[in-house]
Image 1 (tube, each protein chain N blue to C red):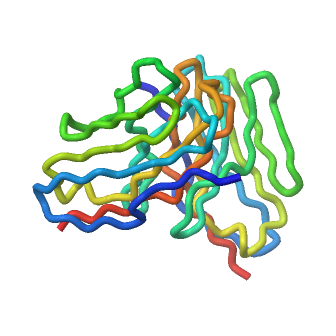
Image 2: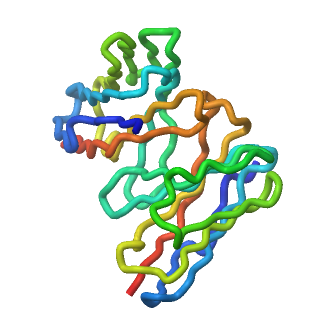
Length: 115
Length: 111
């Protein structure tokens, strides 16, 4: 079946602009994660959605970052007033349930460049 | 907070040699330890995982060992091939539902 998809694949924006990144998880997956990966760096956890529970926002680096998810479907990550240090690949992952031992499947990522 | 340390950051081996990557974790409640492989420009993909109720798991040329007492786990790749060249990430997870990743190891296998 279809895997996790993300759009856009690439986004170039000017400093100070807002951007919205989209993630379509695998159908039926109740858990959804956002990560940030700076060039040559590891995966930095941002936010985690599990079903209808309140999201775990503990990884969001500042109040310029926010994310929403409607039910168990699409999620959007919004970055307001972008800064150059926001440049990175933003990866989304989904998991069939909230059990940590279920495999996380990653999307291809959105490469964000802030000029 | 929770932390995962991964070493080495880079590793270069000759084709056919073995490669070992080590990780330590801080959360004693962690009970799941996956390893992901990320090729250049591609998404991370799960290659092997281990749960806290076992000490070792093998899948062909890849094995993972876990020492819960010491809170460390390792990835072993035997008979390395050029296509094994990639960045490898370890991670640990517990009751919170999310994974904490190490910073990655760039493995280069020279033919």
